[in-house]
Image 1 (cartoon, one colour):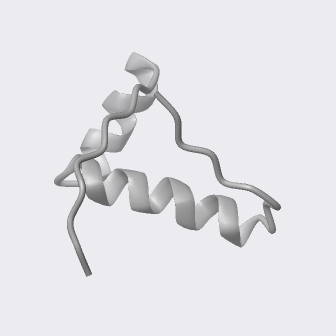
Image 2: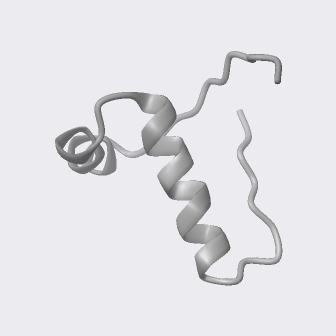
Amino acid sequence: MSRAHLRFRVDFRLATLLSQEYSSSERALKELVDNALDADAERVWAGR
């Protein structure tokens, strides 16, 4: 599997909450995607 660099923006309040739970932005993004999939989202969009 190749590695890619991602950039994403989140609201400051959300970033504060995520930083209390996750040690890296990659783990936080993975959690957000996992949550969307768990909620049966038809699409998960990560944009610039």
